[in-house]
Amino acid sequence: MAIPIPEDMSWEEAGATQPLAIAVQLGRRAALTANKTLAIFGCGPLGLLVIAVAKAYGVRKILVFDIEQTRMDFAVSYGADVGIVTPKDDGSTEALAFSQDFTKTVIQMHSLEQSVNVSTEASSAKVCAQMAVTILKAGGICIQAGLGKQLTSVPLFLLTAKELSIKGTVRFRPGCYADAVDLVGRKKVDLKPLLTATYPLTKAGEVF
Image (cartoon, rainbow, N blue to C red):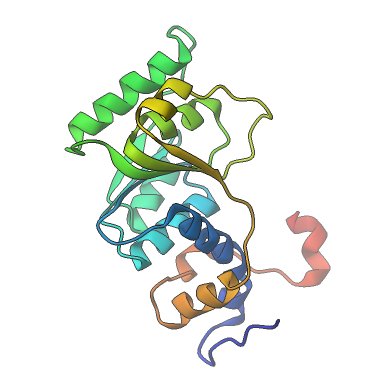
């Protein structure tokens, strides 16, 4: 089951293929292909790697959302086309109405026609889970990757009326590691900007 790595791949990059394999599996679940549009909620490691996979697969336009400006800025520098700081829900508006109003504004501002084909929720926030649904065009796919609360309300009327699909994803499946290594080996994905530090195993406790 071991996957050989190219001679020119560093051990640091090889170690980072595990989270990349998770993003590859997400890309499979979302059926990411050229000419599609993608919205990613959450610019943590998984969100960033989904950007990398989406770019490698030729996705036409990638929008990223985060509540932290610095994380969103890095996501744009890493390949996203549009970065948007998501406003915090102060509770003054009903949650679903808040999500719908925000995504409607985003669609109009960025000329998205009928919204996006695919959305990825990688933040675990309830409001983002709802935005990931409200931003989809008819027939769109929402990939739920964030591990949020066990129960989160979803607008079922939109799910039905727009014939949307909501899929879950976790970890990776057979072949994802090989695809991840291949993407890095062919320079389709650059993991180096994501490597912030390295430590010996003797300091593993400190790292955690």
